[in-house]
Length: 434
Ligand code: UGA
Image 1 (tube, helix red, strand yellow):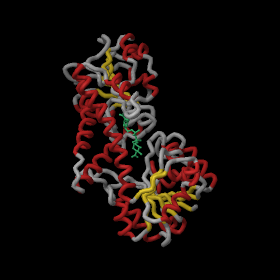
Image 2 (cartoon, rainbow, N blue to C red):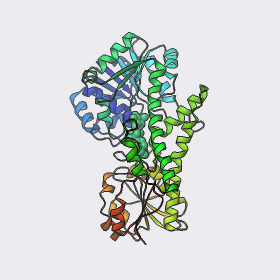
Image 3 (cartoon, rainbow, N blue to C red):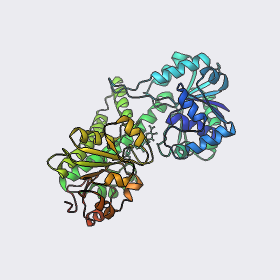
Image 4 (cartoon, rainbow, N blue to C red):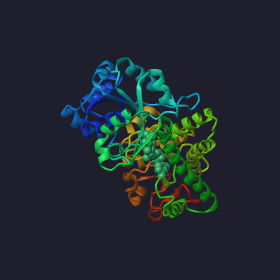
């Protein structure tokens, strides 16, 4: 089939490449000529394992092209996927639908009258129906659940597909688009527009709630003398709870969970169904950042003024160079404001971090980052950081003190190597340090 994908950010570029992999002829469309030029040359402007190879494969095979022209897209596509961003509005926390509306308006002007426009962007419930009415187009809603770092895998082998459709024709077309994925046994849920839109926001709200739940338990463990890592392990053995998304730590960040729960809470208010618990989920998440700053102050005592603090991690999670709403960088910036001399190291996100936080210090190697530090903060759980040898690291730093903001370091091993280690979700540091 001939498909277009409008918006070639992280979601759109992945979707376009994966649709070509499924055998379709795909035209990616973006208003940014630089992005189009980069992708056309097989360059992906962000870190996503497997995606550069897939884009190179299909730009070479001729099944995948990119353009800035909506006229070309309209003439080309039988089905148009809208994958543009829905950022958070600064005034209210609501989703900004400017890019979505612009894409639908451009398609209304150029697409064939019988083309199907499929929304994939995360939108407030009620948007699909409004767009169908406003732009007099046949619309379907097909939310996306991919995770950064696993985007290709999640698109080609998703846990489920959700089709929000209002006609048998739209369902038939979407079934044809995803035929190989459905043939592999992927569960399909068909729904009306509001339900399809809600599946996405509800899924992200649930994931955020699960993380904040365990982080609230971390606060209780800190006060009551427990250890949240052992608590989470024991809870996770219950099939009804499960171990996933129960890793306590510095909390969730990124371009999705934080903005999506705020937009959902805002939309629910509009509908007269206040989801006040989502505000608490957000507040618990933010308090974890405060807690790391508190521990840094306590370990440096009485404040961090003049202390050389090394922050391990800038990406919002490992496997990504995305620094949007990164908890690690939020803490780094706070400590700098409090007078610490902060040096950041990350295996992938250094360039993005430097652009967004030019006043922080950056070290290109892990060794340089550790050398002379008075305090180390482990804030993004890259495997490289877990693999640090605490004895070698102790020889590099000025004072062997570390906060484990992700709760994955082997505390006994670090203590045995002379470190004083304080993990979030535990009441006190272990080891002597100095
Ligand atoms: C999230 C969802 O997981 C995807 O299903 C969804 O499609 C995507 O948002 C989206 O809306 O586009 P992503 O933002 O890539 O995906 O990241 P996650 O893997 O969900 O992690 C989110 C944050 O939670 C990270 O900062 C991570 O470090 C944190 N996290 C995750 C925890 O603190 N604890 C956990 O147990 C799990």
